[in-house]
Image (cartoon, rainbow, N blue to C red; front, side, top):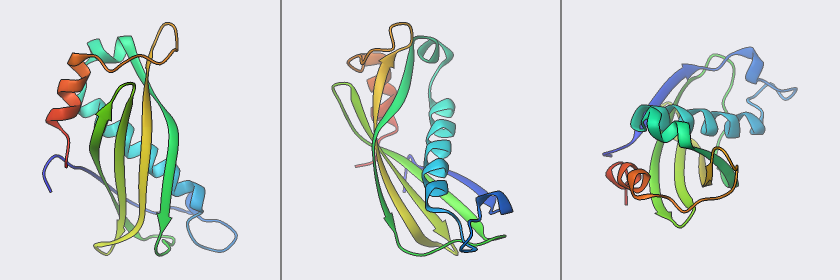
Length: 133
């Protein structure tokens, strides 16, 4: 898969809930973390000084659980970008199998006004050059 970004780590005890597996909310935190890491890698300081992304929707599908000391791979990629919004996808893998899939719709804000702003060409170029699909 081209234009995807991976981040790997081992599950620690802070991610484990009273059912002895990774808490469902933690998967969302992981999805946001890998999205932010990917954006920092592909964006510029000029862009980041003017704009900020915020989540307006998450769709999560859980397929299996993760446990303490599991090796996890977060794989993210950019989908369609339109108006003020951009779709991003994250697959969470354990043993090369997807255990959770997340689709997030991000909204671009002007950093000063904190109001939604149509994605400018400079950002659209970054998104489209890193898009899958």
